[in-house]
Image (tube, rainbow, N blue to C red):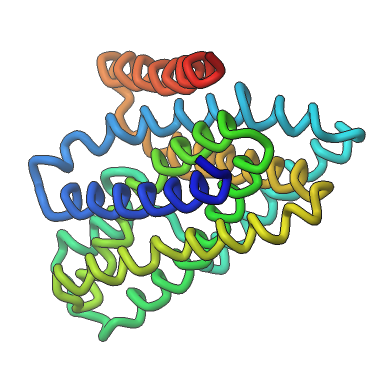
Length: 259
């Protein structure tokens, strides 16, 4: 299987799977009870991918580790600014703005917030595709682990996007269609990344650093604060266990793929 085929397959599967799962969670009150557990697992998967695979591989490929570390810091600041500008919007926890808007049945905003979300989400998915391409161009193992980590955090985000589209007045079918179309921007990003990065190999460590920064930012800034709303000992132990499970899954995947 060629590298380009891996990139396209990962982008298609990731987009379709995340949107389908998001639709189930957004439309089913019963399924939403498990969203918190899924978020905890996603945190572990992302942090595991960053510290067990992406950063070690980027360090191997660079001659300047300090510059690579600086790129990670720059990436974290960049994603903070983008999120502030509502170009990159996440909704990962059970009581986020999107779910509150959906539950309160406020008046529709004639599609304004929905379109804004779609613009930001399309850009997000495009960048995810470029990151997946950079990972697969490094090696297939890193590509698979990176794609799985991206999928893990895409599902909670898509739940929020789906809810906002419903609030904006879109039908369930239209909201699903828009989310699905937006998710396929990752294919365009992956294909573009494949053809451009082959002639610009020196960019790959920096892109891997940005991938690491995006996952660290999402996990630490967006996901973990939501877990603190459930402070009981039982909830905390469950969260820690699921985070460890997410890290262990990535570690195990790396060992199995390497073999």
